[in-house]
Length: 408
Image (tube, rainbow, N blue to C red; front, side):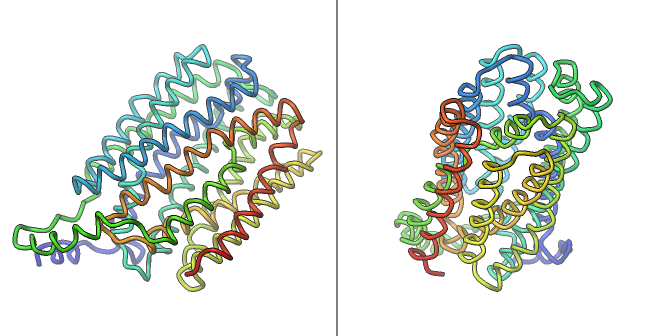
């Protein structure tokens, strides 16, 4: 009764539990910071440090794989100790501590070290945060809750990239390549919202209290469910996600493709603003749509949009083509990202969601290492269009897989 009283005493924000809103604010602030500091890492490596494309793919892939390993651990451990917020604070705090060191990076090895530290933090926090969101909404509102969270997260990306574009223009005007002084300014300004995100998380997000000793019998009943294996649908979903992700290399390559077509740096940043704006605008409506039509259909639609986007990146020859493709690519993110998280929650019981989110995000991250290495190798050996043809092909296969092998 105490837990219900506490929850009911907190006023809803936009019709949802306050945790959803404040976790959205945390993600918004974090994304402002991350987009300013890390989005231009491939250009920092290529333009400032003169790093080869294969090494850039290695940096992106290794970062995502380390992220994946710690997502699996973070999700499992949050189920084990029942303390989602504690791990979320630890993860956001570690990423915040790592970011200032990008100011000092002068080799690709140093960049990789900082990036890995940031991704360890992201891995630790991601699954517990998603479990906090899932626990704060009913099953009927799950798509809407994750849609709102993703929309706020991506709104932060829009703001971060817009600020980065302004700083870039003020420091180096319409230059085609990124300069060291400009990048260091991005790091200095980008650390500030990261610190604010940790403060908001500590003060405003509240975790549900675990069951009291009087509920020990309920815990005992729950244990067999925790120990039992996952639903077959969830296992098949993980396999299909892995297949899709093998063609979904790091977005480093999308940025490199824009520069490959001789797009000025400020325009690349504004393209990323457009991408994240379309992502943010579509995430909530797509989450609501998935509540009504089913997650599987919406995810399949998103992968179809992705496949068309990658075909477009392969065939693009003009800068204006890239503008349209970045907007279209953002729609893919808005359709899939929140809905896939809601689909995971649909397939597993609440007490196993931390582990489930860790496995889901872990599979994605681990597959990104070979995906990025393959993309870098294809770029260097077969041309800039090759990674995008490969990604589009696997997206079509994944779309067929989810529609034929998984039932709602």
